[in-house]
Structure formats: structure tokens, C-alpha cells
Image (cartoon, rainbow, N blue to C red; front, side):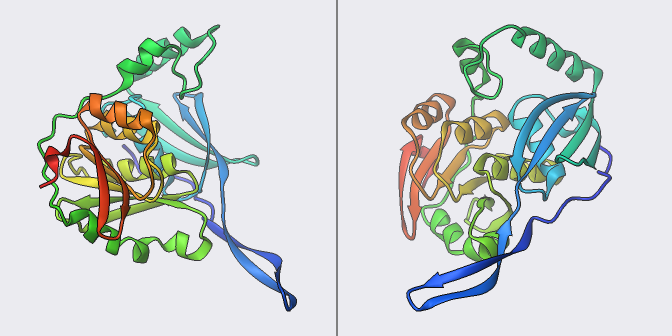
Length: 271
């Protein structure tokens, strides 16, 4: 994949505001996280428009492409260009002929159908087919999640400035955070993290994910699609997320706070 061209916008910006308390008000400048429409364009055709923080967009585009099974590996994206438009940002990607044909056929199957609202899934049967199957035998130490949590806050730079974004952290099996991506959307943060791992050519079975959000179905589905074996979230999972994790062979952890957490599926990976 070629290097991206174009420039990314600022992930945060100062805005004038007034701060009010019981003793009065005063003018101030607040640092706010930015979110802009980001269009993901494949071979000249816009596939999805996401509201995202305009940083690490090459990671985002690659991670989205992998987690939504548009490509199976980074090398199937031949070129990538980031282009700023008046209304937002386009990430223009050129796929291999085989992947472009498969995406075109998928879009043709969607034509004229009523979607179920899950990222272009046109039927419940296809929803089941999209879920990956995790076969990794990775083992996470009992204290690894706690160690990752302890190092999380200092790496959340954008959250520290704005208080308005989620993070997805990639942690080695002992709990050391190796990379972290932030975004206003939790799914976007995960896609950015997946893309960063793929660009570094790291194995998805060599660590675990720590999310600063709840664990939704989409988080589990995206992780399973690329073969991530363990996902930990600081908040609760949904029931559907637990069922999907059980079926996909993924270890799902929720309420990871301090030295406590709850394992909802495949606890054999925690030792």
C-alpha cells in the first residue's frame, strides 16, 4: 500500500465558551474533540460515510476494510489517498481487481433491499456469516488486564485534552500497552487500532484489546473478523455481544476496573 497523501485535520480545537458556577461566570477557551464526515471510497465508489476524529485516517481506512471483510490483508489495498473536501474528508482506496469485483457484487446484492441496519448487512443469514471464528490459543495472565488499565490514562492524550473520545489499546499478553488509538466513536477507535497493527505487520493473536467503552456486538464482530482472541472493556457488554463472543470463540471481558473484571466467554485463555 502506498503512503497516504494529503493532510489530516486537527483532532481538537479551541472554542470560546463561558464557564458558569454558583459564584458567577467567566469567559474561557475550551479544547474540544473534532468529528467530521469521513467517506471511505473504494475504486471510485463511496461505500460508507462515518463521523470520525480526523486523525490516523490511514489506520482507520485499513482497519475498517479488514474488520468489515472488504479486504483480507493490507496488500489488497493498492493505493490510498486522503483528500479534504468542503463537506469532510474522502479516503480514496484502490483495491485489487478480485476484491473490487467482490465488493461490487456485494453492493449489487444490496440494491432494492431493506437493510437491517448493521453496516450494510442485508439479511440475518448474512449477519451470521460475517462473524469470524477465533482459533488462537493465546494466554493472558491474571494480572495483565489490571496492568493495562494502570497504564491506560497516561496514553489517552486526546481524552486528557477533551474528555470526549474513546480509546482502543493493543496490549501484549503480559499487559503492556504497545499502541493506542482514539476517536469520538468506539468502533472507529478499534478500526484505527486494527489498521495500525496491520501496517506494523503484527499478529492479531499476539495480545489483547482494551476498550474504554462498553462491549457492543460490533466491537466483538470486528475483533473476531481479524482473529483477535481477547477483548476487555471497562464497561458492560451487551447480551448479544456475549452470545456472539461465545459462538466466535472470543474471550470477552467486561467491567474491567482497577483489579476487578468479569469474564463472559471462553475463560480458558485467562490463566
